[in-house]
Image 1 (tube, rainbow, N blue to C red):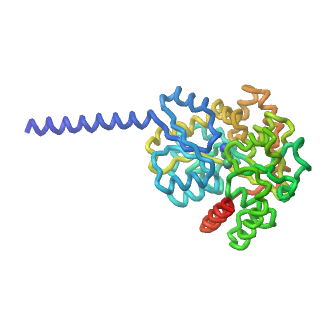
Image 2: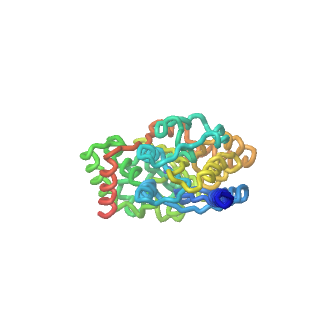
Image 3: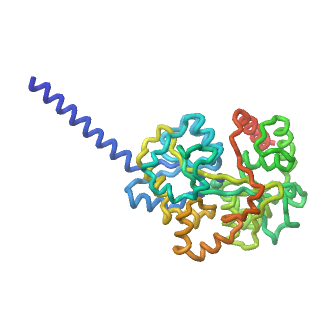
Length: 353
Ligand code: N2P
C-alpha cells in the first residue's frame, strides 16, 4: 500500500514540476509575425527588459502573404498584424483567439472611434495598432506636372517613374476606382477591365515595393506613386518637396490590428505584449519611427509633452493627421468573400505580364 502512495506522490510531483517548467517556457519567448518596417526595435527591447520575454520577429510585406503562410499551416506565432479586411477573413475562418479584455487595462487608451469596428464586431479578437491611408505621393521638384488623380499616373510622362505598393487589393482597387467602379467589386467583368487597365500602366511602373517605397522617392528614381501614409511621412521627413495628396477618386483608408492566432504557444506573453503596445510611452515609439496615424488617444496626448517638436509635425501632416477633406471620399477595403480568388489570380497574371 505504502509503495503505491509513494508512486502517486512521485507522479504528482512530476506533473507539478513539468507544469512549472512549461509555464516558464511560455513566458520567456514571444513569436511575432508582423509587417516589415512597422515595429520599432526599441519597443521590443523595452518589452524584453520589462518582462524578460525574448521577441522573435518574422516579417511579411502583405496581408495575403501572412494569410497564405498561416493557412498553409505555419504555427508557432503568438501575435500577428492583420489589416481590417484580413481580420474579417481570419475571424470567419476561426483563425484567431478571442482576447481576454481583463488583461488589457490599456485598451481604454484607445480613441473610441476605433472600438467595435465593422471588421471585428464587439472588438473581440483585435486591437487597433496603427491607422492609415493609401494615396498619391510625388516629389514636386521631379514630376513633369502635379498629379491630382489616380488616372494621372497613366500619363506617358511618368514612364518608368512610378513606385507602386506590392499590395493586390490596393492596386487593383485603384484601377477599379479609375474605371469608376467600386474598389471592392466582386464583378468578374469589372475585374477583367481593371486588369487591362493595370497592364496599360505597366510601362510607367519602376518597381513594386510595399516595404520601403519611400526610398525610391527620396533618391529621385521614382517621381510619384501609390504608397501608405507612413511611407509618405518618412519621405517628407527627409525631403520637404514630397507631397502626399488624396486623389480625386478618393484615397484608401485602413486600420491595422494586433491579434492572436489560434493555437499560439505563448498566449500569456502575447496578452502582455498587446497591453504593452497600448502604453502611451511605447506607442509613441511606433509613431516616431514609422509615422502612421496613431489610434491611441493617450499616446497622442503624451506625445505633446514628451516630444513637442514631433507632435507639431504630426498635427500639421496630411499623412499622419489627415484633414476631414482628405478623408472625405476615403474608402476601406472589405472582405470580398469568394471573389478573393479572382483578385489573387488577376494579381498573379498582371505581375507576370
Ligand atoms: C508597414 C506597412 C503597413 C501598412 N510597412 C499596411 N496597412
